[in-house]
Image 1 (tube, rainbow, N blue to C red):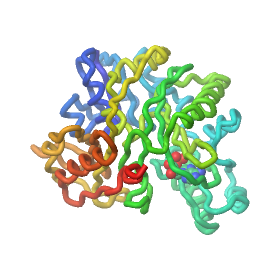
Image 2 (cartoon, rainbow, N blue to C red):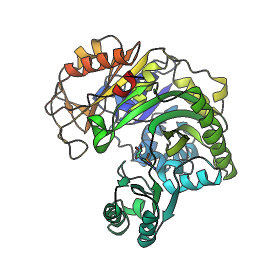
Image 3 (cartoon, rainbow, N blue to C red):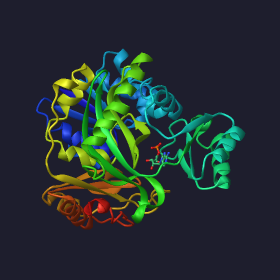
Image 4 (spheres, protein in one colour):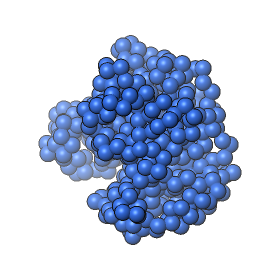
Amino acid sequence: MKVLVIGSGGREHALTWKLKQSAAISRIFCAPGNAGTASLAENVPIAAADLTALRMFAKQNTIDLTVVGPDDPLAMGIVDLFTSLGLRIFGPTKSAARLESSKIFAKEIMRARNVPTAQARTFSDSDAALAYCQELKFPVVIKADGLALGKGVIIAENFASARSTVEMMMKEARFGEAGRRIVVEEFLRGTECSIHALVDGKKYRLLESARDHKRALDGDEGPNTGGMGAFSPANNWNEQLQAKLEEEVMKPLLAGLAKEEITYRGLLYPGLMIAPDGLRVLEFNCRFGDPETQALLPRMTSELLPLLEATIDGKIDNCKIEWDERVSVTVVLASRGYPGKSETGKVISGLEQAAKLSGVHVFHAGTKRLNNEIVTSGGRVLAVTALGKDIPAARDRAYEAAALIQFEGVHFRRDIALSATSS
Ligand code: AMP
């Protein structure tokens, strides 16, 4: 069987690594991949958003299964395109992926089904949006409706900041069409948790819980990033919350989608805020999380391929997903400048020594091979995951591995999973 993985981040390296363990797969291609995927698969120089070239590649190479990593190709309708040509692909259709690509669509469906989420209103008029900001207590959260490279959510502490955000999104159109309409919502307090679910159209299976760290600096300071680290399981998750998630979120959401005649097949991951009075949905993601995937997959002892196949075939309830009892901690190593403009082209050393440590996996993100060396090629460069009997053991091992890896300007947070060591 031939598999194509779309994307070039740490998530895609982890997916490729996990899929590679299936004997049924004879060849894996990654488009465009990175230096890590190149050691396991055949990289193909096609961008994740070049749907035409991806479709041609899949047809010409008789790909049996395509797995989509990032959100953009899903929002552009890659699943509809591939399926219409008889190509098998893992991920939701364009219409179903609106749960992530349109915050307004997600809010509307949650409202219709009473799914707990922040109180919010949607606007296409900036004056009305600002009037509502004043009605809510500051801080307020302002979100561009569409995909904005993870930069479309701004927490405004006061009216001046709300006004400049609304102007930046709606008048200056900094995010183009994505910011023409916005959502303004109440600021929620609590702790966050990511839950991944494989949804097969009607039924679903939850994966283990995880928590990520979005801010750039220790102590949750600094700007938001794509994610500076993660750990699994989440220390703020329990069976009671899981039951709530199933009853208050998953079941009503799937019923709401069914009513709109939308069939969701693929990975659905609600980002949750856990507050003292229960849980609220912050957002829906329609693909595996990055870096949560790098923390989750090393703990998954079941094969991934049959789970993806069962999701596409509507048979996920026949599957059991088994997990390693060990916990995982993932530390992201970033380039100088990230999350702003990042340096690239720096030679990376120590990768092999780090990967030799027991229980350690080094997943590549912004890396490429140049001559005989591996060099940095993006903001987030590597995700170093370690398994351990408990969080302190996994943290020690992950940081031991991270310390072995060097490149000019490397920076990473020192407090990944630290909050979980005391609970
Ligand atoms: P989103 O893309 O909607 O998940 O937002 C990105 C991040 O912004 C979330 O992971 C939270 O850290 C934060 N966030 C979003 N909505 C809210 C909210 N209503 N209250 C507090 N924080 C929020």
